[in-house]
Image (cartoon, rainbow, N blue to C red):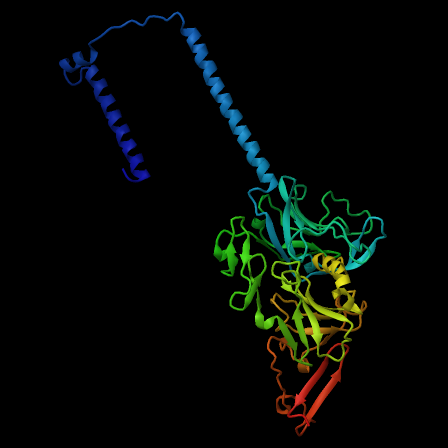
Amino acid sequence: AREVLDIFFDFIALQFLQQLDDIAFNLARMGVFSKSLRAETTNKYFRTEFKKEVDKAEKSRRISLFLKAIYFMNLIGLLCGQIYVSRKQSRGDYQCKSITVIIKDEVWEESVVQVPGKDIEKMVLIYPYFNGHYNQDGSSHDGRPVYVEQNKFDGTEFNTTSPDPVHIRVKVPARIKYCKSIRAWVFTHEYIRKSNSTRDDSDCPWLLRSEETDVFDIEEVQGPWQIWAGVIGRTDVDIVCNECSEKADCNLNGVCKNDGKCECYNNEEGVTFIGPHCEVRLKDDCRTIYGELYNDTWSVIPTPWDDKGLWQSYDRPVYRYQGGNPLINDTDVVVLVYSGDRWFGVRQRQGERLFSKEGQEFLKAAATNYHAFWDRALQNGTIVVSDATTKDTPVGVDFYRIGERGDQFGPYGALYSLQLNNQTGRGVFRCTDSRPFVYADALPFPNITGSGRRISHTEELFDTFLWLGDPN
């Protein structure tokens, strides 16, 4: 037989034949067929006697004890194996050690923050601030591993000390863990509460929670998550394992090492790759970018603290203003820094001293421990913000100057477009040094005639500056 069903059919056939044989034998013993067959089926052909062994009971007892010992050892082995596997499973040995968490563009405008030793305060919580790398810390909660937020510079742990605790806070990371009481994976932070009262008496305070599940692997969590923004809402949370098993997991932009991490190519055919899966591309042509309005220049910031020599934030390069914009004071430092899902233009007045030899320790601590929420990036110096984007650089992204702020406006304040002619999708920056000209016949200005004219509309940081024809 070659198929399982054929084996069943064979057994049925054998059983049928056995029944036919039993019927024929019984009929022969009854003399139905003939006297000779009856004699053959009823004659006794042998006789034997079985002697009772004196030590049979003792042997039986020994065999019984032996079998019990075997069963007991099997049971002990199975229990030890189960305990061993369960222990490793609860520690996360069978799950991904490092993940990237991407929370969609959700905002809680009056989050309740209680830092030990300080009064409760309300802060604008933009959830993508907490995007980035989360690693297992070796602990477990309710039988599942705990994932701890890592710094936004290189995906390692936040520093536990600071050269200037007043201006550079020691960061307490967020955590993602499983809570058996609500049967869900949750995102939580010990300093952020749902309410400034005692109404939230849950033994598992959460800011985001998955749908009810019993899975051990967080990557297997299905469906949208519930999010707290003053009331319960719903959002999508993307979770990706940072480990690799083959070169394709590194997007063919790096090598998968034996430790399961991608080693990204550096300056491979004019491109440097960053990110846990080498998914972010920084072309040499885009190490310096140019603003369309003034042809102002912005360049990536080289640092000795990173193996690629780049100041990074949320797996994106940080750009520093170099010159060309008459509205920016040369003693100020302005940087374009990615903050989870948007680019922020952050100005530090009189910040040139940060890049001096004396300021290197402070600058390194600020860069390697930057966190858009705890450093209050939106409130402290951010003057420009982009659309939500996942682009590798600021090129091709629309930007806005932040104007008035208050409860009348959105969480980012009043936003004024920086695109030429307020054109949506035009972007502000480009990677090449060629400056485009915009001619009058291409613009919807009916009162403009002739050539050699230009329009200048002054804003706080950038001008809407249009060349119309050849300038006189």
